[in-house]
Length: 75
Image (cartoon, rainbow, N blue to C red; front, top):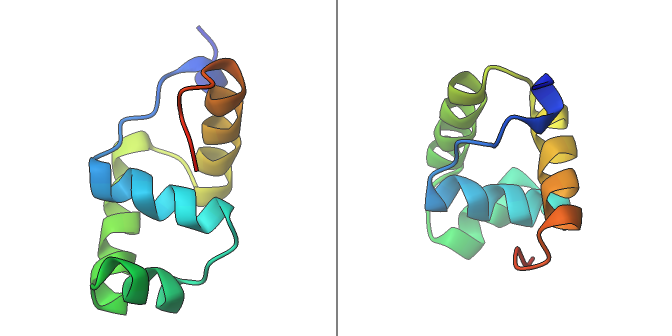
């Protein structure tokens, strides 16, 4: 299985951050929407990157691929 096909390992709050990032929201805006501090959003994002062993652009790419295959994933 290629690395691009490995499922993302995301917590619900990390998925929300990813969804909002794909929609173009900044970290500051995401923090406001989620009623969290910017520091907390950055921490969640860092955890997401470490757990999935890749950078944020790769996670976005994999999320978009997954969304194209599984139409149940909504933004």
